Length: 295
Image (cartoon, rainbow, N blue to C red; front, side, top):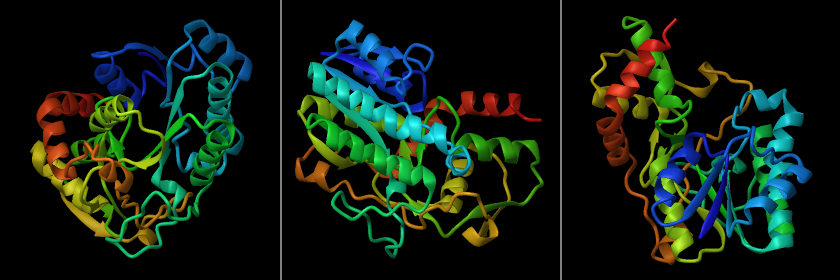
């Protein structure tokens, strides 16, 4: 099939290119090549490629910045998916749209997970835009897959691992506070790309949760990652109140892949195994990148 990836040079988009091009004809477009917030640009560019599948990995993901930069966040996270869904309605095909755990308020007591039919209730503006993006897709086309994922990391782009590694390497003696009362399932973008390929293969439709199995806190995740990569560190667990941010984070971001399991197409494995494999594959690159980016 012919697959067009929006945000094809990002963290998830890059891994989707690697995975999907093995069996499909893939076109990975950057923001400069396709502005999804422009309906005329969407019609013109997608009209040129005529893909069977549009995979939307483009998003405004700066969670804290969304609180003040509301207009661009809304345009990318709501109007963009709506434009892509409109194109699918006009010319056929399928839209695969990536969404987020931030559509939920996280008030369930861990480790009770959120399933696909739980009622969304976002706490932040970012979460609100991701929810409204889902609604826009569902109201515009019935040929869609919405994938909610969480705590995404990969070798491309910025993420929690790269940030914590840079901080620790930049000041080895510093005691670093890491939040220990927010729970989630760290999900490798490469694994998610494999799951997307499986959903395409099995002709999935509708809304799915797709995160790693198991869960941990940010503090536990940082300790596991730094221990595996072999970097000495001094982490201190703290509460969300001790590490205030402009946007409120869900305390519980644990998602259950209920629909994937029911359809027997769940490709996700335990988060710790994927983190270990990620470090094994990219240890040298991660360390080199972190050293170069130090102040």
